[in-house]
Amino acid sequence: MIELKDITKVYKRGEEELSILKSISLTVKDGDFVAIIGPSGSGKSTLMNTIGLLDVPTSGSYKLDGVATEQMSDNALAELRNQKIGFIFQQFNLLPRLSAMENVELPMIYAGIGKKERRERAQEMLTMLGMGQRGHHKPNELSGGQQQRVAIARALAISPSLILADEPTGALDSRTGEEVLELILQLNQQGNTIVLITHDHHIANNAKRVIALRDGVIIDDYRNDAQSGMQQEVSV
Ligand code: ADP
Ligand code: MG
Image (cartoon, rainbow, N blue to C red; front, side, top):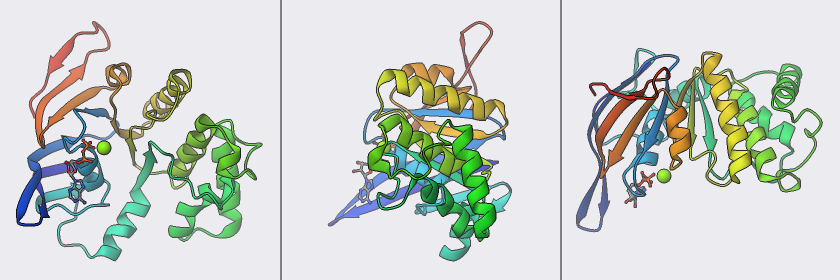
């Protein structure tokens, strides 16, 4: 589903060139659950934004579901993103002036889904996440955990084939974080492909595969073996 080949990202800071991603090659299969770990500043968010088509790499090739993205226009990239990818962020990124329901509807507006179907689908998603009674609430009337549930409902609204989560539990207390992890595990069991950035070893241990980044390079890539709890090296 995700095929990155020799991806680089370079930022210019004055005269200086900063290499943030250094020739990253990576394949993620449908249905996998990948955790990306690594120190702050190692390029995790940049890698995720590249996978999410929010950020264009400096060089290299990226195929999403067999579609080569290098030559695509901004509009075409946005369309592909809106069709295929659901995003979950650390700070939830809900729009404060919109209700929970309207936030969940947003990606469906981008996808061109009509109002009636949007409402029904948004209600269905909120209900699935235990937020069925809260659709009219504004984000600031909800707890962090509730906001993240709304954000997950929003990510799921378009039935994305890929869910990208950047530190989704980073702003939550450990118990609420555990609930969000359980939700993400359920989504993966239902067949959703998940790529998630985390600092939390417990979450990384629950992923099927762990990729460690350091200074823009993949330094480790292994599968968590559910049977024995042993880690198994896989080739990059
Ligand atoms: P992580 O998510 O692992 O903390 P990031 O991908 O956010 O790392 O950032 C990696 C490095 O890239 C950091 O040093 C950051 O300062 C730099 N960086 C990220 N975005 C930009 C940008 N738009 N311009 C310049 N430097 C950037
Ligand atoms: Mg980051």
